[in-house]
Length: 269
Image (tube, rainbow, N blue to C red; front, side, top):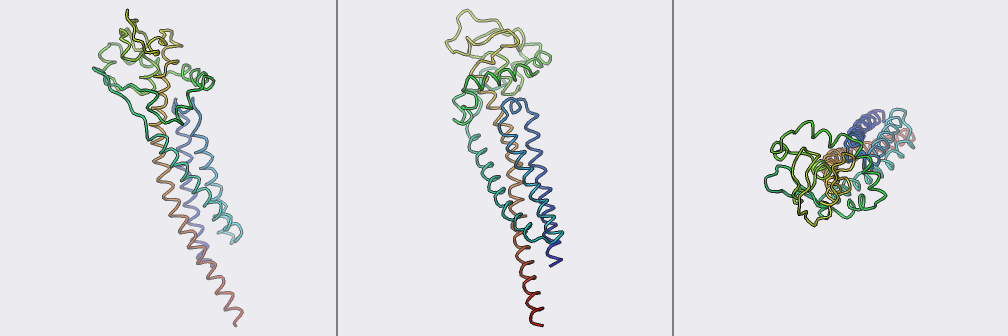
């Protein structure tokens, strides 16, 4: 029994370690501009990681002090959390499976259209109330202003691989035909295209294209990029947690079998 408890304790310690990359993925998402303004995925990830850590600690204590009810709680609670983590991984995969950039002639960066993204993501930015808050958050960052410090010449800017957020929010869409002055200041063409984003562009550095659908699309493209990266971490952690959980169940069953056999021998003698 003691040996089995030590094994269970070791397995739970590994589960504690596996919660760290999950929590880290959530914290990492908070550092990304798009995620920090939308504030959707990072908190579920962090909370789930913390719960896994707490449950793993409970299982470790139960194994170390041989508290059977605490081990049973660990097995039930960890199973629930693994299911929730699996649902989260599947959810992120499903909502980020759509959406990609479109190349433009003589441009290295891509441009993005709102209708290319999943309905769930579009709903995050379609509401004027939600977008006003996100727009205020975006305009307060240095996402666009840092472009002016990096690119002075038009050709340098056109050859740059800027982020989707910068492509959608910091400049007018290429189809509008604006003339480059600097990355965030453009001269309006005489015959403007009928795309509404062309009319939304404003050289005011607090306005730019933050009201454009291209900005919403660029934000979602940024979200997708970071969510996919975080989802890889979550998927690897999920697979490892499932393996550790199965080992824990086997060790717990062996411990109970050893305990029953020991009691049977004591009763027989």
